[in-house]
Length: 143
Image (cartoon, rainbow, N blue to C red):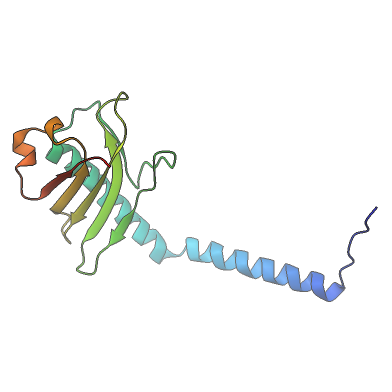
């Protein structure tokens, strides 16, 4: 039988102090007003991006979307990032029905949350001519 290692009182106090310090740093950085404001802004932008996505691609209401607001890690990771010019990049996945696989998308937005560009992976023939002819929508084949 192996015996447990014996820790000195100094090691125990050191471990407790480091653990409490790290956990309090993480806790207070999470509840800081700045990070809460940033999160609220990101949620607003992501919700608007979802609306714009449905409108631009003229998707039926039965379509499903994965975005930074409604994540599904089994499908893939989604992101929202501020860009250097004050705009946003939002990514996610979508499908028209449960019979389809998930397709990725990336939307570039300006500072007023207007669409600059939308990149979508999918079959070009599954989109109307009106959609595929728009200059700010780029449809690439599924890889």
